[in-house]
Length: 254
Length: 253
Image (cartoon, rainbow over all chains, first blue to last red; front, side):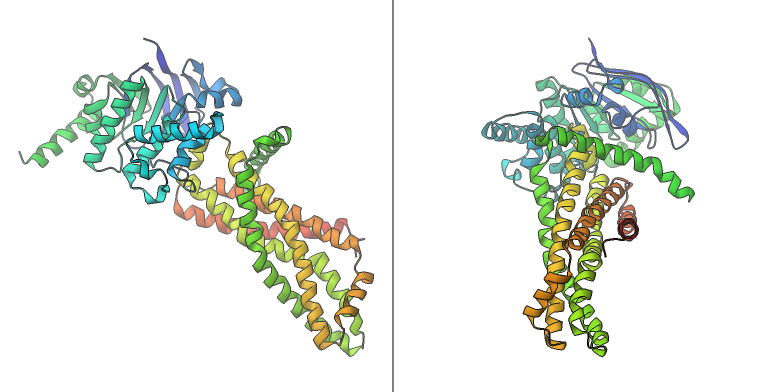
């Protein structure tokens, strides 16, 4: 298997502190990998470095077989058409309707005739599990879950090879969160997408992720399938995974 | 002072990026966001017409009225035309419009871009392979640079019309006399001088406003602070630039 994303010795200095101190991991083709770690451990910052929004202090990020931070701005923009990013709050363009949001990357990077473009937009909106009548709505009229779906449709518009997702299920109720997980998994499997997501949601980890990467104190302290990582004897990992068992026990009334 | 030095690299960085985007548009005019520019042109230009008309008209009336009281004492009624037209075309209309634009459009630019920063829309623009400079800054910059001279000229006309009204009712100067005198005493140079200050004011306001928008950090309070900063800095910038023009072109009197 070849690595679609590979981080080597990534170090980040923010506000006078080393946030990442030599992060190494890889994501293979077709995998869904979750990046976990405590609040402030720099998951989101790492994700932003992987998509070319923030330059790491040192280290190498190899995305889709290209060295991300040594690309020229033109090449970086070309690379950006090959992956999608789902921001935590969706980050839809608030002055455009859902359909125009999804059409924005197509308008910019392709010269599809308008009719064909509309069809692609409708397809992406349906793929993301939105009813078609949502297409004419503005982001402010959508619920949190629908915003995420609309943002997912936009991220899928250019048929990316890789998806980055920042807290895909945050702010969703448990039912919508599981639905969103299932949708993501289905899309990744059927479209052959590779995905890297950050998450706090243990149900997401157990339910849909192939592998987790644990970020703690600026380093990767464990990685592997969820079941294996949960057994690793490390204080932070143990308290993280036991948080779920105890809360689960409480809600079940056992 | 140390604060001023601290923001200098940020400013140079921002200006460099705007310059690069502008250069790209000059090389490939098709890359300009035409639709967005027109939308902005409507917002900063067309929609500002009523308020510009009201302000310049009132200033024209008040200025003519006060000047008229003084001038009447010397029986020099006809000189109202000289005083009012020169003041309006050279200083009052360009400055009034610039102050209006700073408060109206400058504040709007900062708040819009700042809110987009908070909701990560700007990051989304970047990850979609678009340039925030091309999509957000250039349309606003170009729109305001086009709109401001037009509004200034409109302000000249309305302001002088207001004073013509006062001159007719208070100083017995008929409209025909007023216009004839105007043709003799208001040099074209001076009108042009007032008009060519306008795009410079406009560019300063747009750049200050957009940079402040991008400098918003991810919280709501920051938007308020940056919007305030935009209005204050652009007013100071407009007054300073105006002083600079006056020093560099003393002959345009």
